[in-house]
Image 1 (cartoon, rainbow, N blue to C red):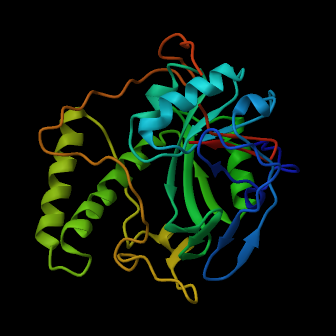
Image 2: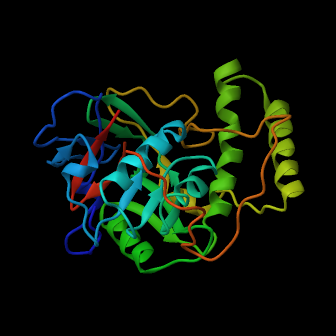
Length: 293
C-alpha cells in the first residue's frame, strides 16, 4: 500500500485471504457497508508478496492472526522487504517484537472497528460516522513521517486516526476491553455479570502494574467514542454487545497464571535480531492486496 496522500486512499485498499494453491486472481472487488454508506473497490491481488514487486514507498499492514505472523513475515522477507514500514494491526502485544526480529521499521496499530464478515470480500462495520478508529505509532515508541502519511490516508478513507509516541499504551488498554469477549461467550451479553467483569479487569490491571506497563482505554464515556457510535444496518444482525462496548475484537487476554515477559524498550526502528531465512505474508503494495492462507 503506497501512502502518498495523492495515491493512497483507505477506501480503495484491502487485503484478501485465500487458501494456498489457488490461482492468483487479477482483481478483487471488496465491499464495505456501514450504517451510513456502502462502498466497493477494485483491487489487484496476488497469492504471494513476491508477485507484487515491493518498492521503497510501500507500506505493509500485517493483519493475520498472531499464530500466522511468523510465516507471513518470512514470506515478506523472501519477497525482498527490507526497510519499508510494517504496521502490526493485530490485537495483543506479541506481534511488534516478533516483527522486529525480521525488519527494522516496525509500527503498532490499535484498531477500534466493530465489524463482521458477511461473505467473501464483504465487510460490515456497525458504527458511524467513521468506519472505525485507529491509533498508530512507531514501536516501541515515537512517530515518524510514514505514520503521518498513513494517518492521512486513513482519515481520507473515513477512518478516524491519531498518531502517538507510545501507541502500545492503547493496545494494552484494548486488551482490557477485550476481556469482556470471553465472558460474553460464556454467559451471554445480557447476563448480570458486572462483578465478573470487574474482577477480570482488576486482575489484568494488577498484572500491568506488576510489570511496570502503562495503559489507556477508550471506554464508553470517552469523547472519542463519538466518532464510532453504534448503528444499525438494514437486514443485518447487530453485534451482540455493540451497545455495551462497541467493538468486536478477538485476541489474547491476560489469564491467571500467565507469565508475562516485560516488553522490550529501545530506540524506534531498532531490530531485535537478525532477519531469519524463510518464506507467507500479508500486506499491500501500491493499492495491491496480498492473499494469505
